[in-house]
Image (cartoon, rainbow, N blue to C red; front, side):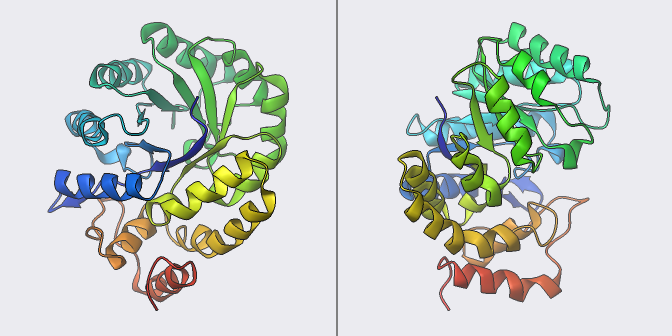
Length: 292
């Protein structure tokens, strides 16, 4: 349903406010470059520092801007189950094609709590849902057995898996319902994950290199692993450089270097440190997205 390269799009700010013109420009760039879908209000979109009103506006505006040209999967997760339900209901009303739901952070729920959290959202909102497991950010790992249980809920169609473990990916695919979608949550592991059955990625790197990310994923999906490997190694400098500091600090700096927005993040994030800027610029040049 949602296979391919989906960009976890940044939320552009101008003087502390959501920059709708900037977002429209980014959406047009993504679609023109062949990205397969847009994911607003994820981690890369700084959802943690958006007010509820901003969160809803970013999603609604993105749906309007995309205008059904590619799927929109909205980040609607929260560490409050009630809030996750509310955000997901709003997103459905705004016209999204699906929702991305992160595991509750800070609470550190047990596996049964994770199951009931996602089950509650699924019962409350009739919308295709993608789970999001990223223990490095949330302090909780949703184990394959829990994912497998959730895969049998009809509207839970897949997972963005960011544990960094290929064994965990393998176990999820093996244990879950046939056809359950696994997307990479780690750009550098996209190709290895696809080699064992993953169907794509929700990606940071596509913010700056959408054409090559889409081409790499398409090549892997069609069995052309020679081409996919070539693109993987071409993009590797970006996979590394875009995480020189906490995401989305480097990717916003990269977009600014490319003339696509301002290098503005919200506290407690801060602009990219000067010591990393030459490394980031060099990676953008090496990957061919910035002129030497």
